Image 1: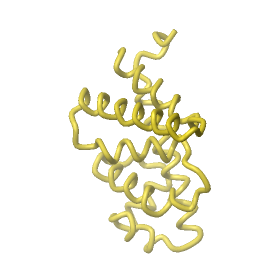
Image 2 (image 1 turned 120 degrees about the horizontal axis):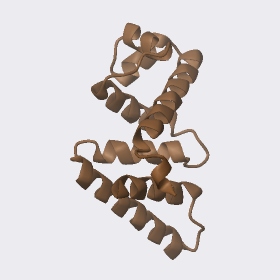
Image 3 (image 1 turned 90 degrees about the vertical axis):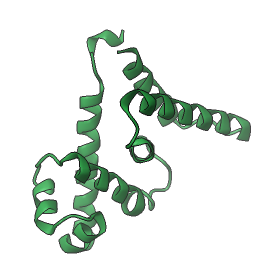
Image 4 (image 1 turned 60 degrees about the vertical axis):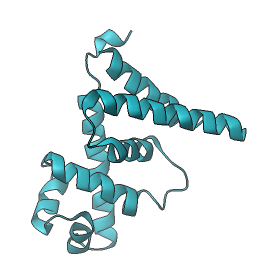
Amino acid sequence: MMSETPNPAPHSREATVQHLREMAAARVENTSLRGVAREIGMSPTGLKKFLMGTAPYAPTLRRLRKWYLQYAALPAPEVSYHHASAALVVLTHDLAPDPRRETSDCVLDCLARGYEASGRSRPRWVAELRAEYGARRAS
């Protein structure tokens, strides 16, 4: 039962922040701290602190998610849970919580129908995100 975890959002948020941190660290390693900070839209000092484990403020987290979709997620061979989750957050970030959940669920429903119509199997992340958004709605 889902009642064991009253709100999955904090865990998911921590996992997403950790994933963003790992992607930013990898990009810095391949380029430069200043260059990645410029891509994200934050100071090099702020990026360094984020990479060392500081929790980002909400506006910084939004910039990191947008950066991730533009710079970090694109080279991947296929869309992962993290890619899809970040995309949903970017697309719905300025909606109130209830409409954000409903919109995300609707987008996921459309994606599921699209995969079905194309004869391709649905990626696992569609079901995982639908379960997550459904769990949030139920709580």
